[in-house]
Each structure stands twice: as structure tokens, then as C-alpha cells.
Length: 347
Ligand SMILES: [Zn+2]
Image 1: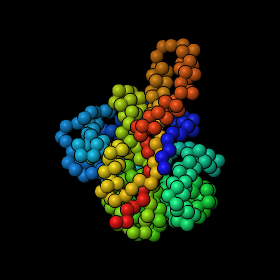
Image 2: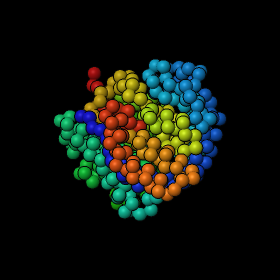
Image 3: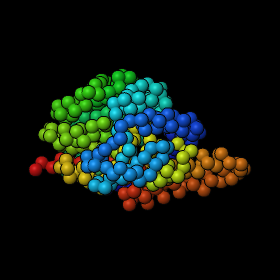
Image 4: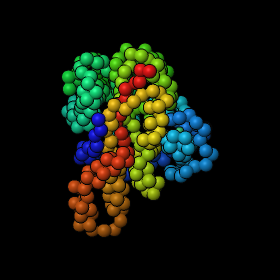
């Protein structure tokens, strides 16, 4: 099963701070970059573990990046060390508050239905199309955050679902929002144990794999745990957005920055599939490349001397073509993001 595209309205509405507070985000981005470049050099590819070239393919925000010669994965030149990760993710209350303003159940539910319900439905229909009854399976959402995806699965009728998350504050808030104790806290050090010991049929990692320090070890544990039959992931990709970021140093880099120190490609994902013996059940390609392009021009226009008429005209010119143009990128598998459902090969 393959599906393409997704309306961008929710994205534009919910990320308005990226449009209106570019300077603030740039400042934070540079503080993080300065920490990243002080980490030891990454010697092997984050995806295939083969040696990386000594030469950078490009540099942005002072950080070098390398395209892996073996699997085409895009690697930042430095390691995501414990120190780096604890600085990026450690103070979760702050990170959390900066990105989302979920201070009430209404906002939580809106995010669940606008962003996470389509993901839950994708998983559900993918399993159906694979002749499996999704209601007969058990689910673990790994890195569940505040439990948006767990809540969405619950709402479409999945009964046997839990989530696990390292941030205690997110677990607490999520359980409060869901109204049930479905989220559990695990310690970062227990990441591999959680995966190795789970008895669930389906494990999901929505926007999580790329943030894991030991992403290859996690995949190995999944491949060795015979209880797990399916893996759903959503990962960021090396796409047009990266080129926009290279050429726009003063526009906030939403895509390749901070927690994203490396990006997948269709080829690097295929490499993983092969190595860890998984096959693709379904794919959903959609991206935010055109929203990034729109934002890049929007923010630059705000900074020049021009009439409000001109700026308003730009919005009018773009508003109904962002999604159709993005859809063309999506249909060619060139979007900034992909959702995939894998089935583990049994032999
Ligand atoms: Zn590689």
C-alpha cells in the first residue's frame, strides 16, 4: 500500500512561531550548533556503520555534513554523545514548552485528531490491507511523548496499546490527557531492554528512530525479539528542505538541526530493511518542503522594505498551491518525511 500527500493547513497553523519568531529560533539553533561541533567526530555512518569520508559534502551553520558512500545516508560530522543528548533532550520541560503549548485537553485533542489520527489510520489500514485484523494485535508506542499516537490508536478502537517514554513530565501529562494510565516511564539506559523484553506484536516509533543514540542496536533488538511482528516508523529525509537550509543561513533550520544530526534517504532505509530482515508493507510519503520554502520567502519578505500589498499578494499567490506542488514531490518519494510499516521477515 502506498499513499502520498497530506494537507499542510494544520502544520502552518500550529507552527506559527517559526514564521513570527524566526530570530528567536535562529538564536537557539546556533546555541545548539555550537555544542554539537564540540563533540567528537563521527567516524562511521549512523545508518550502515561503514566508515565515512574525511571530507564534508557541505557545511551549514558551522556544521559539516557527509553523504555516506555506502548507503547515501546524510550524516552530521559529529557524534550525538550523551552530553549532547542530555543538553538537547534533558531539560524536557523547557523543550516541551518551547515546541507545543498543550496546556489544556482541547489543544491535546485537536493535535491528536489533526496530526495523529491520520497516522493511526495509516497503520490500521496498512494492516488490513495486509490481511491482518488490527484489533487482534497488541501495540507499544516507543518514545510516546505525551501520548498523542497512543491516544489516536485508542480512539480508532485499538484496545491493547501502551506507550513508553523517558520524560516523566510527559508521561504524567499524557496520562492525564488520555484519562488512563497507558504511558509508562523508562530510563534512557533501559532503552534496549524495553525493546528486547516487550511482548507486543507491533512497535511504533513516530519521529523517534532518528533521535536514538543507538538506533542500529534498537533495530537489532527488534529483529531478535520474536514477539514483535511489525515496526512502524516515521523518519525525516534528506530532501529539498536541506538545500533551502544550506542557502538560507538566516532562516530557522527546521529540518536538519538540533535532534536531527542525520537524515534518511530512500536508499539508506532500504539498506536497513535488508540488514535487519524487514520488508515494507506500506509507505506514506508526505513532506513540509513547500511549507519550508513558503516560510523562507515569507520571513525574508518581512525583512525588506516593501508594501503590505506586496506581502499580502505573496500569501494569496501561494496559499492554494503549496499542497499541490508538495504532492508532486511526495509522489516521487522526495518529501522531507516518510511513514513506513515494516513486517519482519521470518526466515
Ligand atoms: Zn551509510
